[in-house]
Length: 327
Length: 262
Image 1: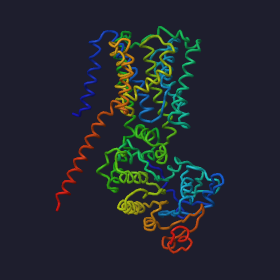
Image 2: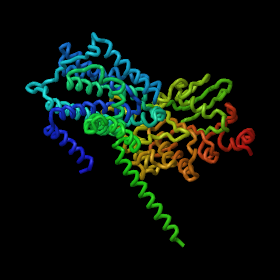
Image 3: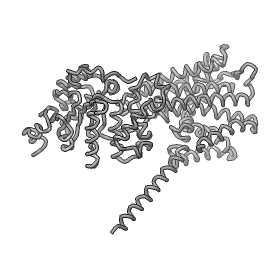
Image 4: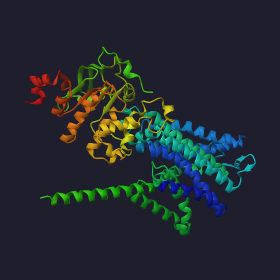
């Protein structure tokens, strides 16, 4: 069996078993982490696979959360609210994708950042809809016939199932020709277009699908914390999500799993440092970016490249020795 | 399903017809009324000194810039205002002067992505197998280009010459009717120039399938152009100085004075 299959199996067992040994806050944190794994899986598609610079992902996260909360307050069932959150984010994602057809790199990042700020202002100022700074509280958790998901443990397993389903869907998408088209768009859009890749459609789709994942994550987040206000959906949250993608390894399928762990769990593990914990976190991120600019999952690639380079050097040395030995 | 462009080509018409093409940048007339035709199966060379308008002509034909005047017809259809995507869908492939591979993808994936968008609908491709059913075709081209040993390596990790071969192979994956090659020998060593020439001759006429591709080639390597091309157009200061066979161009006094220099 391949090493990656072993690691995947180990991760699955850990995710299934770990909550049994954790207290309520630990389970809550794990669920929080899974929510961010889903959100950053979507951002990884937009940024890591399709190469679009987006600093507006928290806006979709917020739109998903508010969509579910508002619909549930209006009496709509969670099971309708969740796909509605994804669908609304998908369509807003297409709209946000249009600037990407005209601008790229840092300019696109600023355009998406502006979008995030605009959405955040709507959340804060339109009290009649969003509750403004008072937010929306008492957001119920879903239930299934004969099964309540109210408890933290039950809700954790529900979010875990959603995460696995969304990961499988994204995996299938990335293995399909669409995955290659997204990578081609990222690596060289001019060449891709000359080969018939409709870069306009794939750009819009990368934003829309990424946004839909953020929408689902936002809806699950709303139900997890059961109270939402504009705070978690600022530009700072978007930057944090971007950081999670970059730290994990943009364009690596499991990058968001590690990246979200660094963004969500590491600050908690560093609480022993008390008032210094954010300083230690910041320093850890700076060091990571210096030594591993392509993220944690670039480590195997680096090892492989070093091995290849060493083998090539040895081969050259042998060839040179053989040449010298000839009369 | 592939596009049915091969079946729709009228046999009695030129594959490419450029008429009175003009493009100016401010006061500089980069291309000043260029006209020529390329026949099915023909390798057509474009030569000229730096600043003669070759690249502007190429970019106009590839939909990257819109000419000020004139028309470009492909298989009898006016494609003057079409962009690179539409031209690709109509069977126009191209290579670039500089290397343009997808560096983080394997060589094999580079070839597959080069043709997958010509298969079926976009929605259908979401459910298609990863190689779009193009694996065998990619493998055949990999063997033809003798890059089997690097097929699974990331294209960006290869040597310049290997990347050049991948770059050229990509342009042929979708079996285009017309391929525009922008300085295919730029920066490659003499032995690779010979390999590229051999490959292009093979790809020009595939006896196995009977298919014929047409090429328009911009190149500064005169030996390569004279050996490969059926006809050559010489451009000077945005205008056509001469069009003819390699022998005719070699014997043309004006060309010798203006370009070949002896």
